[in-house]
Length: 111
Image (tube, rainbow, N blue to C red; front, side, top):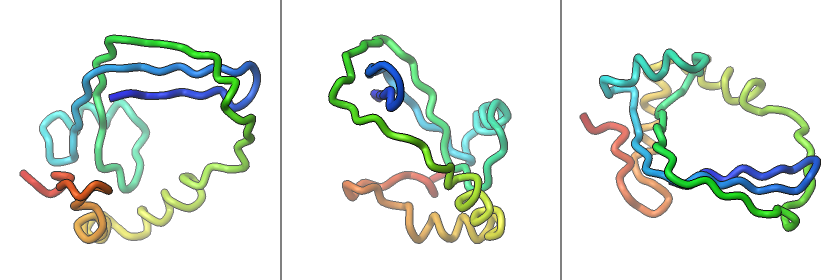
């Protein structure tokens, strides 16, 4: 997995981390322990662990300057999932999230 961080304000900079990732779903044994490390979010469906083996930087002069207007997660997404309730969220995921953008199974409902 590669994570790319871009500076949208201030000095231009791009930072990339490279490594091997694993995904943990709510059905997995590790979920409870790992999820406890984060704030509780309605609709949380996976946690990625990344073992980083390379970090690089580049100039970032091609990245445009941008400003954050607001966080939609706190005002739109979180309340929407919370109002649905756990069973409705799972039904929504089953309808919308069983196949990735490239047509591969997501494994979200496998045991």
